[in-house]
Image (cartoon, rainbow, N blue to C red):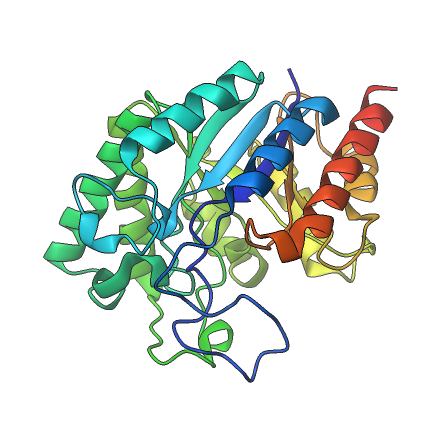
Length: 305
């Protein structure tokens, strides 16, 4: 069955660790309160059911008061019981819930104090605890999204605290995350943009067992577009893919990506598609979410025609 996925946020502390007024974006700054509103959450999930979505990737972050590390929570974070209740509702709607915790240093403000302890013994302990607890909460999900995108200094130039792992350290930590996920029966799932700047190293070291979501939000798919060409590299080297699409730049991106993927990615390695909005689950972002859901429904019809 083709996956028609949607990324929805409970926690949203994954961009800047300060009030980033020099960004021409809203909602990027980490907050000490939850940015997930119940009515919109319910409207999105019910709308996704009607659109034919069958997988909901849930970015948890600081949005859950984990039993193992309640200190990560913010005001309004969901209890574990609340999360389990919502997962049951999602399954009743015919969608498979998949957890996401982004461990890229560009997107880990949700970790609170542990975001400044990366690659230390305490950090590894916390990460192991979180992956174990989340795997239990989701009842051993078949996939576990680990993020791992945009870990560069350029992506952190507005941050108060910037850090980038390089060379073997990035890979060692990645393999640590993979091992922790696999320990609990899951398949590691990551964003694929590391291949844009390090193609040879990526193809040499990235396990085929990992699930890859290259993200390309433009309407241009020519050979001069590095992010689009990554789909070819992944296909040629035998990686399973779930292309990540978005209405970030254009409402046509999902439809065009579906058309491109059908032509260039073999059916046995094209597991499906993941629609992303990169907006919190808040009322002032409602229309962007509703548009994205409509785009998913339209693209699904085109794919299945």
